[in-house]
Structure formats: structure tokens, C-alpha cells
Image (cartoon, rainbow, N blue to C red; front, side, top):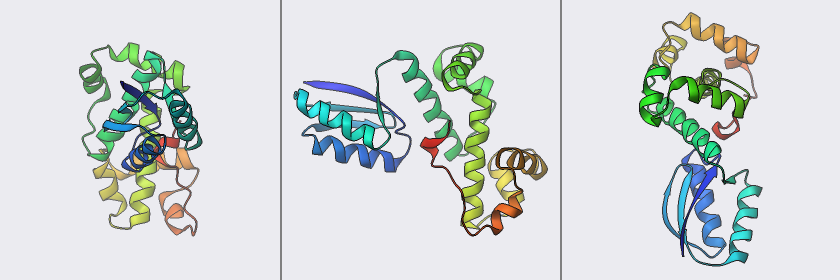
Length: 185
């Protein structure tokens, strides 16, 4: 029996590797995998219980609700856009990608996640800024440009609002406090 599972918090390649490992350990065959979604084959209810438990232990959840699935796909899309540096106007690309009005998706996201889509994207960007600072390959202006900010001052203000410190202060820290992408929200 083939079944498709939608998995919450599977938002990166490391997540995919963990899910693949647990699928095989539970005795299932992997048919396809993409961020947030796997297709497996096998018909073992004990194996499914084992898989669900293992995934939960890693911070993943099987999504059983259409709304939750939509929100998870929206998060994955935002993460992919950020990673590929293809950020454009949210109110333009989200309705096209999801075939729903931006207003409806925004209200649904806020109700489900307790923050706006814009705030979620800002949090993603700030974690990306921390990553860039940690790597030390770009200066602050280049980071701002890479993340589609109009100028580094705007980025600096957002960084301070979210983290409580300046980017320079963060850069000098010995212990960088970063969240993994799947821990945002």
C-alpha cells in the first residue's frame, strides 16, 4: 500500500535525511521525498506507530489537517525563496503560488501561527543574517543586499528589534545564538 504523508517541520535537507533514516528503520520503502512530503509503501500498522513516534522524537509531526498542510507549504515556500534569494513582494508571489488571496492566507497564517507572514519572514531573514555573520564572508551591506533590504540601516534596525543587539555586537559574541529554520515560530 502506498501512502503520502505530509510532515510538519521537515524544511531542510538535513531534515529529509533524518526522515529517510526513520522511514527505513520503521520498515517502509521510500517512494518519493520533498520538503514537507513523503510517499512511502508498506502496510504495517505497528511500523506506522514506530515511524510516528520516531518522527515526533525528532520534532516532526504527521499533518492530518488541510489548513496545517497549507501553512506548512507556505513556510517551506518562504524558506526556499529566502535560500534562493528570490524574495519579491509577498502579496504578489504568494497568491500566485497558492491560488488564494493574500489576505485570506495572511489571516489564516496569523491565526494558526500567532504571527503574521511578514513577521515570520523577518525572523527567517534574521536567522539568515546570523548565518552570514557567522560565516564571515559578507559585510553588513552585502548581507542587506543579499536579503533584498533597501539599505543596511533598515536591516540593522530590524536585527536590533528582533535580537536586542546590533549586528556588530552579535559578530563579537563567542557563542552565537541561532535557531534552526524549523524552530522559527
